[in-house]
Length: 141
Length: 248
Image (tube, rainbow over all chains, first blue to last red; front, side):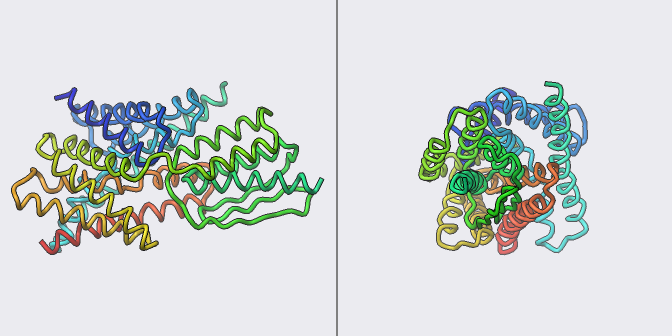
């Protein structure tokens, strides 16, 4: 089951890389970044951490790894970040919110929408924090 | 001297244009143009880049130029190649003429993956992701179908109707409709998981990433407009799905 999850997240991220036209020789790397991000997310969520925090940690890790790869392979970090964060996008929560909106159940929709918003914010904060780390590393070199 | 300035300017703008059109961050575009100008001896140049236009000026000369960017697509391979060319220019490995030749080649080069490969990738990615969050392979084949068709619809509609948000709305609508039909016919499991998987290739991952990175680099206008782009796309996808759910 765990192996299945790893494989699926690896291939999902790698295939997203094709949609975004990333260079063929870096496809495997972007798959690896996506798999690592999803692993961090699953591990934190399963250990009982709230999904907002889990998303933040996963996004941070994705961006951290992407910046490391970017330095190593002299390519823009975006190439690894974009496929890496896609699995973290709060599609499920947003979908549930939308489902309540269309049946006019706004009271149930609002908490879900806020949750989706918070998770999106967590992705952004993860990217920001890791960029800070990246700049500190760069300065030391 | 003026001729040389014009030539340098042209190369800077060509590199900037290629990057911006292929989905590079605006701070990277500014940085690239300034670096190229500096390595050809124009150490003081200023670039101002927004997602829709580039203004570039070299200090101490009369020349300032503006180019408009009307067509934007996602081709991160081109961003990487132009980035590499600019690094080599900075190291002094390329002359003006060589740099121009290489950039022209990049401009003419076709997209790195043909449409059928991208559609296949989108289909497989949808299937993988739906199975990933759905926790079962029962979602795999239905999402493979709806995800692929949705992505293909997006590309086709976008080709004829230049309004991106309509194309996204329509693709999400098709994805939702197909999933509902398949579930009613007895294929697949959870509707939500399959719809999410099918529309994930449309999610504006690049716009979100670029918005955050541009805002951090202090490019407020570019960051905000990319953020607006991401928000509108998400909204279009949501509306498409809501449409399907409400006519069910």
